[in-house]
Length: 391
Image 1: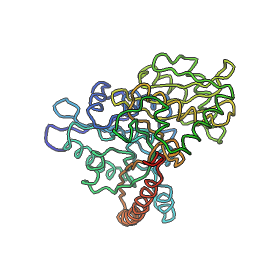
Image 2: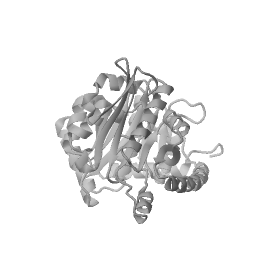
Image 3: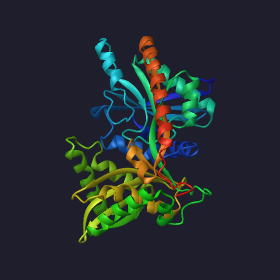
Image 4: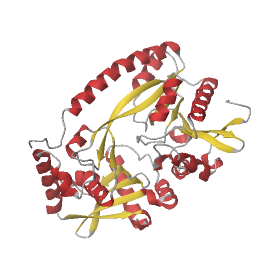
């Protein structure tokens, strides 16, 4: 530890950490998100969604000095690589082929949540570095194969690079509420459409018209205005989406009950209705203080052409413009999002592997992958959906 007054605590239940202290530390970070709030992480555990039985064993690391919380992170022991969205299946396979155990491994990230943001919550850079060193040392003591910090912010990546962890980059697609000419927010959805190239404008208008002509109308509800009936319908849609793909849903119904109760201001629900009956919905998370919205879950009980685009992109973007929100993050992957003006953004993760030979091999792999990622981003930058000066 940094000095004699600093203490590291490791607990198996985030409820052992004072919620106000945790959230106070979170909001002091450069990139807080609702997915790192105490209530969100506790709901993951209490609902049975992220627990040992599902392959997520919580270990909450916290750094204290004279009774004050200095730094903290949510670490999970993983027995698989599902629900992470930074894919290391090939690494696990390589370990297995060499007769070495890859699992359990350690992951620092909110479960099932590929949203960039602060992971190492800390009062200052020194505390952040101390917490990270403690996490690596603990992984060594536990004889774990590896430690992975997923979708961290710039402060996290800086600390990880300084500590010798390997960095890995991916691409997500985010929308910015800013006119190209002056950076000011769009006045309305039509103004946003006017910023796009003609073919993109035409395509979006056609897609929206198909939904409207099918008799579908939308309503939205935020915070406590989302009723228990709304949440029940949302979960039907959410569950059906997973079951249609042959999987059980990651999150239990009780998870949503908890976050609806304990962090209601962070949720926005769009419900599609036809003939007065709900047929589909999309759930968006909010960080009101930053003016950021996060597309999270969607599901439908009926098939309507282009309904997914309307529920998951056009309705949220229209809402963001009307409410003065600055950014909408569309989630992991999805190059098709560029046609809706969600532009490529580099995201970062950091990795420590205990085995020296595998660490060296992964480092070489990440160097090659990184070069490919740079080329991919450069290519995407040339494919702007926005209107050019002569268009």
